[in-house]
Image (cartoon, protein in one colour):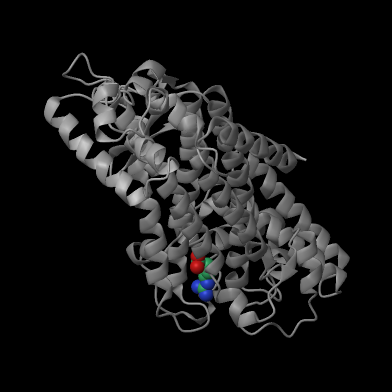
Length: 461
Ligand code: ARG
């Protein structure tokens, strides 16, 4: 048997050209979805009387056999059959003979491939949601163990104000919560069936699109057949949500990498998440964190390549659309594995809490405390800022910190400063006193953790 669409052709095909046009090397990932889509389609064809019960029975039997072969790894695909749809149809012919040719009644590969991708992404996004949820759980656990762990908070990568390590973890929790919401909200636009839109214009057969959609578990169907076969927004949205997710993971990885460095020494990763150097025996490199940071590049790339593929396409189907798949598969795999690695890495990392806290003692990150102290005693904040700024300059010249300045000196600056200043300047006090909602004060952090635990538990129900 020649090509399934070979009727109109006289000339011979050439293998090297066929190979350029083929998508089977990568779209075989959709084999499961393709068979499921066909099973629903044939059931609908029988229900509407377009096929006889017997024909539908034979086709269903053939498709089930292919499903079993696929599960057993016994289904082979060939380049001559171009893509997953034609490969499956060819196999069906081999299983059940010419009646297989009736399966394609009232549909086209255009709605077929779109259906497969909707089914595929629906499954992937549900998995992504579970994995983000798990990582958020890890972050909350890490935070809960470290409410009173003090670290320098940074702006411009300069010590700014001391914060709780838990607060830092909970910031990532916040980002990942939004990521998870974005994926959840996108499901609504993935969960739509294009099946029955046919090539572009619908079909003359009395099909029941709502029925096949229901069989496949879709929540709704496309209203417009042209839109149904040419819409790839749901993939773009997935790639865009994935890019934002990877950007968050990459920022986190960047911090992990810094924190592991000799200069920081705030954390240590377990051996499992580190690798050595082939030349420098002492090295323990945070390769996994670097790789996640690096892999954000390919995910952004996948988003941009699909945006570019789509931007000039006239309606409806064009072969360009075949280029929508590899980036989607690659992104799915990349984000799912990155989320897993991230969860394991964060869960198992150990903190050098002493080093972290000490880093807030040999610095000026308590300068705001002194300024706030003066403002509390009635000095306008701008004036207090000026006084403390000058004092910091003097201290840096002498190589001392604010907590080393003797009380007598403080009182020559302003008698407003009393002996309780040293307590105020302690980093723990600085953190503790930031009691404004959403701030780093221990009670605020504790409350944020409680809210998150409740939210996580609710999501599981
Ligand atoms: N392999 C094709 C793709 O992925 C399937 C749709 C082919 N349709 C067509 N009219 N050539 O886009």
